[in-house]
Image 1 (tube, rainbow, N blue to C red):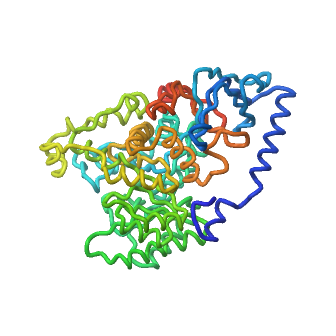
Image 2: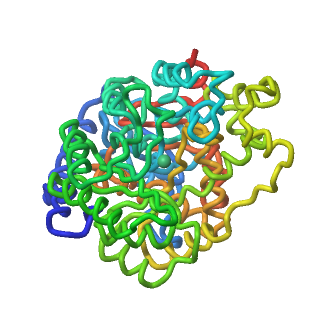
Image 3: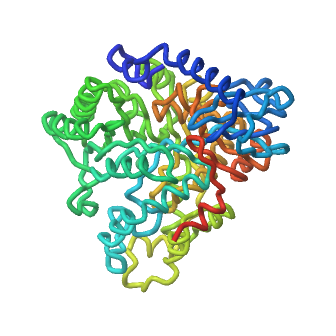
Length: 487
Ligand SMILES: [Zn+2]
């Protein structure tokens, strides 16, 4: 199934319909070869309780299973009693542990760090920390940022918009020994300017005519963008029909190249306009009103994907009112360079604190999740619309890596069961990655992206933070060692 709905869009996911059969045959052959004689590059995870997030609750959990990995793929899954471990295989004892597919964060931004200085268009701390310095630090910090994702059990991420530099991020991840799979959109096709973010390669580019939209989209297609992303910002007085025409121009150009259209549209009105214009992926919740039948029908017509990003707005508010506190898992899994910076507000000289932030600090608001967003997620889920877990990591207060655990707890608060949250973070994530045939399930033929957990993820989403080992493309990582290796 493609992310999109129409004939043209179908092509990008269903190119090779028989590939799955081919892979299963290859997997069977590989299994036969490795049982006959052993086995370099073979790993056996022995005796794990597998959680299959794609299955209904009664069939999702299988105890005492062994998984055999050869190279970057799973080649065998079966009961530990009857599944032979090839001689010479690397053996991971997993009795008393749980095994889930690698998590996917379907909404991140590598050009941002999560600290106070990363979005000067929101609050400008330039008098204390010039944005150019923050931007340069983020670019130089990429290897560490990749590691914190893996350490949190996240084996794939979608960077859904940033500078043209994003295409280098994708390359660097591909070449790295310790990085999640990364797919990217380039600069946001935007209704508004963000001049403070423009250091020569801006992440957000204002376009006002169909010609400008098509030109920008063309440049991103030339760089093999995985998504085209539109920042659909509607303000009272704007001509929404004209805006919809711009979104449609972006969508038509993207679809003609077989690339899906992602849209930031957080109001019900703009989200519907985005869907009429061809959106395949809504990257945030609808936050201003309860969703309705028309919205659900449009989502279904486009076969569109929904990413709720429930925490990110709370992160901004907590940071700007000096009420952000690291969670236990953030203390252990976040980038050790960024973590102490999260408390900077207490020590920044008063004259360098922007007025907006000073006002929030003087009168700290009570910060709670948006009930409308929680309710809309439950409605979307119950309507059978595919949902992907995504944090919007990199925004102020939302750390790369362990912020997934804040997000998944909020998804559970919206009324999803732990298994459903895991489904969004794996099966939904595979869809966001446009890799539904390779990711999101534990079965022979799939890529070996897995997390071994010390606690039961079907009992509570909190247990998803208890990673013992993380496996990406068959490579085994210890989360503690990943963090220790960061300088
Ligand atoms: Zn975003």
